[in-house]
Image 1: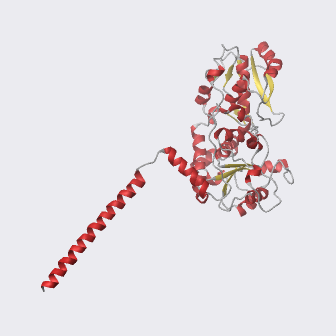
Image 2: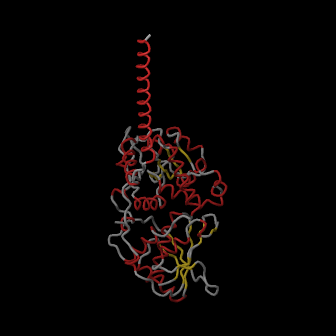
Image 3: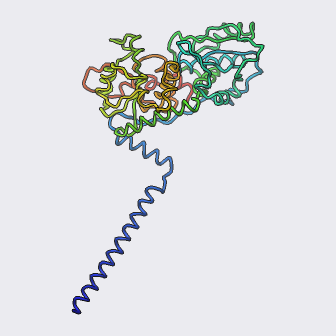
Amino acid sequence: MEYIVVNRITMDARQVLAGVLTITMFVMLGDMIKRDHFDSLPVDSIHATRKQSLLTNGVGPWKQDAQSLTSCWSKQLLGEPDESQGYVTFSLTNGPEYHLSQIADAVVIARYLRATLLLPDIRGRSGEQRKFEHVYDVEQFVKKLDGVVKVAKSLPSKVITGPVVKVPSRVTEEYITDNIEPMFRSKGNIRLATYFPSVNMKKTKENSNIDSIACLGMFGTLELQPEVNGVVESMVERLKTLSRKSNGQFIAVDLRVDMLEKKGCQGNSACYGPQEIAMFLRKIGFNKDTTIYLTQSRWDNSLDALKDLFPRTYTKESIMPMDKKARFLDMENSEVEKVIDFYMCSESDVFVPAISGLFYANVAGKRIASGKTQILVPAHISGSSASSTDYVSHYVSKKNHFAYSCFC
């Protein structure tokens, strides 16, 4: 009996010791979990870790973004504007890819003429008209030009707009002197109508004061108004969520069925259809789990060839927040849809222009400025595979885009 009692006491002591050890282990584990979840790392460390993860774990030819470039212009270098001598008016037309160039030319001309710039309205190809503030941030626009060009939100009641003057994109000082200034001095006010004789976004050989003003106008003035910006941000986040298998990365492809039909893309090296884009992306290494955003607003049966190879292919209709579709996905808002596409293509991890033109050129400029230089230009690849680096846009590989004149 005495043996049994002693044995039970020994066993009880062992059980107590085991229990204490178990509790201690749980406390230590709890501390470790607490540290992992709540002891935050510095933001820079988190970003660096995430970028490294994208490089080591990403499947496909994804590249790390470069650092954002620093602007080579400053308001101090430009100096204060002279007293206003009259008004320059204009409209933003034909879509966001044109808006950047139109703003740049208007700012250059107003500065040269020492004129006040009237806040422009926005006019679509179908004749629809809307106020600047429906798309862009007015206060930021005025603030960015403060000290460079005076901006008026409306014309005084007794002032008329003046005669229309045609202006070639990337206007030069010589052209202003010979063709615009005489009319302005004669009439007091002028209205600009920018035209685009060609897609000219080439880097200038020597930076001048007029280039600095053009840089500010093109890259430093236009920001989306809060509601439109919120839609873009929510769509980007939605695509990142859908891209878990590619570490939150996605491709934006400027592919619009109506534009392909107008350009007649069969055998045309200036544009590529859905099947050609699908084969190009597959041959340079992107797999079926790659997430793709198309600038086409609503699904079209012709896009099925792309979705067959890349099931995670989406249009605005499928990823835009439900409460925003009625406002931003109808025919009257076609210009706003284009603005959303422009900024989606500027924010994606990779941009592929299926259509050559000004949209591609100006998206490239915004991406170069922000360090998002993975811009891949499609081509017909004869073999079974190829390196994506062979198809990087010449704007990046040769650094010959106007953006490289504006950023250091």
